[in-house]
Image 1 (cartoon, rainbow, N blue to C red):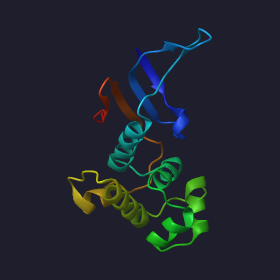
Image 2: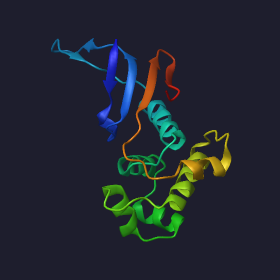
Image 3: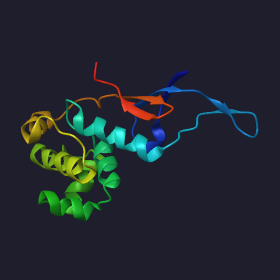
Amino acid sequence: MSVYQYRECGLPNVFIHGLSPVRDDEGDEVIQIPAINVLHREITRGIVGHAGGISPEELRFLRTEIGLTQSELAELVHCDRQTIGRWERGETPIDPRAETIIRQHVIDVLNLENEGGVASLARRSVPTAQPQPIDIDAAQDGYSLRPAA
């Protein structure tokens, strides 16, 4: 078993531990990823819970996971759609106040736990130089987010 970088979700910083390759019909080794919805929920937990700011790619991932258009997200955080687009393309930094609202909205929509409340989210909503790794353990019964090192 090795670590699989799960780029298919659009994020460069998601790593799944514990997946074993299987042989496909042509005899090639491939990685099968079961229960993608469950996996994406864990990725979402990792994004809203990590200690630094959300990257542009993570913002796009969160927005699509909760089913919002750029216009709908813009309305939620009181800005225009073009601003959301600039944030998602990394052209301008994500406003920390908007990021806090987005994190809390994702938590509310997906019924995720938030032990520290909005104050904890606000402390985390600061620009971060590098995307933080999201490490996930794969098991027969699903996925679990690895605690940050």
